[in-house]
Image (cartoon, rainbow, N blue to C red; front, side):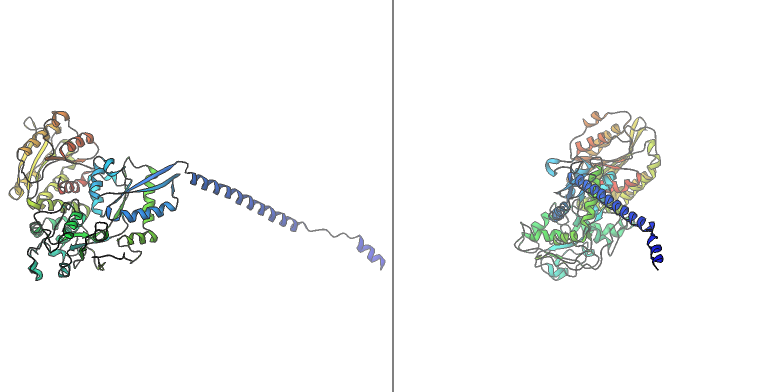
Length: 568
């Protein structure tokens, strides 16, 4: 028995190696994970430190905003700043510039006036896509990305308190037909709606579009040229009161100061809901608020598009920051801020209170808006109808470079002639030795479009190209003839369509010496990149005109509509 114990005592039990290896491996993995976590933390902290330090410095994103919502956009900008945004290693700060859309458009497309508007913006929030379309028509390169709506506001008819209940069944399509309050059983005399210049006032432009649509829309180029639409435009222009305030803001002020219906010289004026809310609750609010009536039927709606701008003045950091701020504005929390300022948004049905004169009536159907080109054509058609129309002389380039573009230029001119309700129109062409030794030819002398429509159509169809350009010599002759035929009390202008530079004859200084001031504006539609934009801008600014730069000939029709829609 003792032998067995002795034998057992001599046996040594070994320890298996694989458990030890497993333990060692687990320990090593754990240490590796800790090391990686520590390294990752260091990198994260370094990244955060770089972000907080903004290695590329601070950058200011300037956003030009229509005055009706500038205050609430500043509130959104403050929220955005609270997120400590960093773009491309730049710390981003937002500067909101309150500016009328007409002033911003003029500044972007001519010379930006820092003394009046502050520094040039990197993004723009007007009250309607109408403005984005106009910017595109004038210079498409200035639009950095597709506009995106951040809120909406229907167009109302603002009227004195006594008149508003009477207009409950009014429709925008009634505008051309209703001329007297007797239509509503009231003894107030003439019924007239003030339409501040639709080229500068969105509510007027949308109201006119809705009146011509006759239903849910859209107005098309074909319908705009119909006899029925031209008749409606003529009637609508005839109902406009003799003295119309320059802006919707001025029209509201005059209505608000009136003790009785029609005391302002007109009965009502179109206004966006948010602008009426701002008017009735602002620091200069009237003692008796104006009342907003939502006409029956499809409603024209201002869509407040955010436009990230392009061009050489916008750097990569500002471009990316503009897009990031746009996305931030469409988040639910920021949408609620915009709703408190009077915009309608999808994220909430909340409305600001108190809101005297604004009922926030539900919109059951939106007007289908016209496309971008037709929108410009509507404005120019209105300009041709309002107060007898304009006196327009077109000088068209028919030099050899225009050959592949000429058919579309003809179509644009023919469409303008067909849609013109009244006013005067004339047509010249230019190229070297086009008429004997003259580098120009007068095809149709400027005169009443109703009398010259057929002659204009035939001349447009017969336009052919020839060698050379000599723009300045041709323009001097055309301008002098237009100046001799100047019609007082009307907008007189010369519009030049060209894709080339002047290659002989009169030089720039010689042309400028023959110009007579700003009563007769010269505006240019420049196609492609071969024009001398600096020279054209010099001529336009000397005469109070404008320069529209279109990438290709497809943009000519919209650009022509834009040029002819303005009153200057």
